Structure formats: C-alpha cells, structure tokens
Image 1: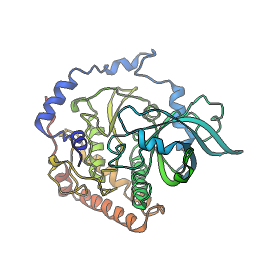
Image 2: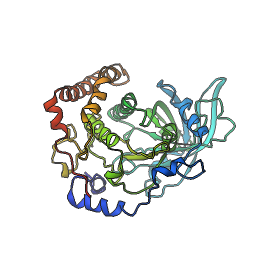
Image 3: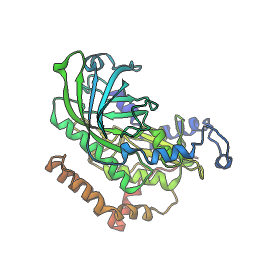
Length: 377
C-alpha cells in the first residue's frame, strides 16, 4: 500500500486518532437545528426548485447504459495532469438526443487521489465540467448537470479493470435499494477520442456519479463543508447504517470522522448530520487486486469484514432488518447484471449471501457490532 493511501485510511478506533478528532471537530462551527426553521436564504438551505430539479434529473432516471463520445487531448491529460492542481482541459461530449446526436463543449480535469497517480493507473478518473446553462442541454439526458465525476478504467488495456469499474458501479444501485440517502450512478460506454493522437483512442465502460450538491438537494439537505465531524454530532441510526453497509460490502478504506470516502450532509428539515459513503473500489465486494487493508485493522485482506462503527444506544436489530428486507432485490441486482462476467457475479452473490446469513442469526448479528468503538467525550 502506498504511504498516502495508508495515511488516508485512518482507523477511527485508534485512541490517538479519536483524541485528534475530538480536538479538531470542537473548532468546527455547525449551526443548530433551529437555524433550519427560518425561511431565509443562507448556505444551509437549498430552494424547492433545486430539490425538484435534483429529484427529476433525467441522467439518473434510468440504469440503461448511456453511450458517450469524449474528445480531448487524452495523451497529454494522462501524461501531464497527475499533480495536486491539474489543469482544466477543453473537450467535447457527444451523446444521443431526441433528434440525433448532441455535441457540447466542456472542460475535463483529472481527479482522485490513489487512482490519479501514474504509478497506479495509466488512465486517471475525470471531472466533467458542463455549462448547465448551455442552450443545447435542455431536453437532453444532461439537462441541469454541471459537474460530474467520471469513474474510468484504471488500466485501459486490461479487461479485468473494466470489470472492476462495473462492480464498483453496481455498489451504488445496491446502496440505492436500501436508502435514498446515497449517491446515484449511471453506467456509460465511453468512446475516448484523442484529438491529437487518434491511434490512442479506445472504448471502455465507465460510470457517472451524481454530484454531492445534487445528492444533497434531492434529500432536502446541503453538504457539510468541514474537515472533521465528531461522531457524537452524527445521527446515530444513519451513522450505524453506513457502518453496517460498509461491513456488508467489505469496505475498510473509510472514516466518517475525517470524512474519507464519506460525504456528510445536513438535512434542512431537522438538522440531522448524515454520513454517506462513496468510492468503493477498495471494498471486498469489488475485490480489486490493488486493494490492501490498513495494517491498523489487523485483517489479511479486504474480503474479511470488520465493523468500523461507533458504539451507539440505538436499535441495531431494526437496521439489520432493513438489509434483510431487501435481500432478494440486492441478490437479484447482482445476479442479473450481465455486463459482469458470470464468475464475478457468482462470487459477489456468494459474498453478499454470507453477510445475510450472518445477520439472520441473533448471536452472529451481535458479534458484528460488539467490536464497536466508544464515542469519545
């Protein structure tokens, strides 16, 4: 594991990290819930128009694979835009419209941490920066979209990495089956056309991820812009739900305290802080060959599940039941996703089945959460 990945994968159960979190989050100003009762414009509210726009976004109204053509200087992007402040590069995006193909101009920018580094991936993940006021967008699948993450194949010449992307994509609709408080994703087939070196053009599956502002607005919430969140400030049920979801998928590379691979949103209606997970390529369910657990977790590989939630006085049985209630839907989702190779589908279903069998039994269910971390005072 690279040092930076280890450093960003801090286990919130380590006492010195808990103390640091407590000290740092104490200085983060978070408005009280009462602030949400005032009908004033402030950064903690979104308009009803934004709520409806996010809920009705056509891009995420379908799970059909959307075919796209991206044209840009990809050779230059891959070689030069690997640092902390990558340039925005001009590009064009072509996609199907009601009356034929639509082409719009946009900007591309590399993104991510581990996957942006050349030593890890020969093709970096991208931001797609659209002009939401572009007159060509209304009435198309990209209407209302502005900034989107594009999750791409890490190694464009190796089929296994395309399978990883498809598996990672499928974690999001799995999440959506359990709660609306989750990011939506759209599978795409992208033709990457290199405008300077056409021979370097290629085609691979990818997926687009809903922007955090749209995900928040859809849930009548706003993103919490803070570097840390004390676990006592979180909604206990929602924080435990995320911890159990990550336990189900074998996700170890996350922390809600330092908001690594977690986005925290604040509901406008009651002020609750809710952590929401993303970036699941280091999960046991996806099982990439590069995923290595943090040494702090004392597990051999990411397929070993470990509960990383905090101890909370809540009804865990009710949360487990939410998962059991959607068991058949989740298993069917993975079983029927034929873009995945059959052996990968079977392996994923078996891995998920093991989770469901574990939480069916009360004794084994209790053992899932017994290693919870006490919330620091």
